[in-house]
Each structure stands twice: as C-alpha cells, then as structure tokens.
Length: 67
Image (cartoon, rainbow, N blue to C red; front, side, top):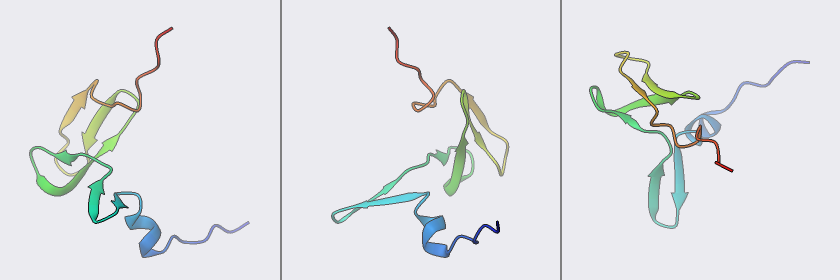
C-alpha cells in the first residue's frame, strides 16, 4: 500500500487553527530563534530542531490525569 504525499494545506493544518477571524498557533515558538521556528512536542519535553533548545516538563499534552 502506498501512502499519499500530504498536500500543502494538510501540512499547514498541523501548525495553525482558524477560529472565526482569529488565527491560533498550535505549536510553541522557540524563545531563542524567534517567531516562525516551532518547537517539537515530545512526551516530557519541548525541543527546537534548529538550535537544539530544550525545555523539560512544559508539555501540557503529556501530563497524565491524577487519580
């Protein structure tokens, strides 16, 4: 089975969300590199692919609910 290559619109949808007239960025910008360079979200850290900046414990999606 051959996977189809994603189109440009599908790639952009990973980084942005449109709600009404507002544009919301889904990923965090790198504090060192500035706007336009997004940080990768891992299970326990956020990492910049350009400069290597890493923050531990700041990923909201990775937090498990407490019982």
